[in-house]
Length: 121
Length: 141
Image 1 (spheres, one colour):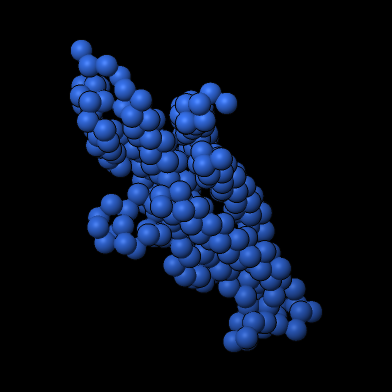
Image 2 (cartoon, rainbow over the protein chains, first blue to last red):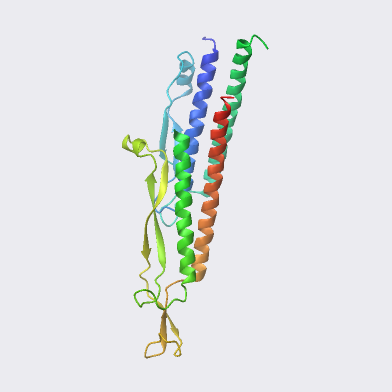
């Protein structure tokens, strides 16, 4: 079993932030096209699995694996549009909160590093 | 930067929804205009919206996640004019009927409500994206 290093944690938090941004971008696109006839609401799925992530902790970075595809199972309005206002606002808020969580953890991590650099002062 | 294009997406939507509001307002304003520039009654106008990738570079690479919206054009509603019996009107025909614009005021009001709601939603989105950018910048503190 490999130990979890600082750099792996920082990389993982970075990935979480990237995902949050990807989800936010897609939700913003859906909201923008709330009244565009024929527009199909999109959603982000992540093709990489937990296994990928566990091995990616050893190698800093890891892949992003974000796939944007049509959201399935949504009711279609008469003009062929499938965007739902509440759904997208919830997605946007959730992505934003996810980003905040990762950012908080990351800044705590950076604070520790700074603490060490300043020799505990 | 993806957050940047997300902002552009929401900004494009504000633009489009504002156009919708403007068109609805001018429809209501001209609901009784029997003489337009061509001598005909005012025809109801409609905004045509279309999806438009905001980041052309990403679109060229085939990974356009940020899809904005654009006003593709403003079209005139070709449905028949309403006819109202008003013999004293200067634009009345031989039978005393006046051709009135094909504007349905309640319909325009509903359209305006929809546009205002969508505008609001996109403003909320801009606020959230701005918060995210701010949080990202806070990491450098």
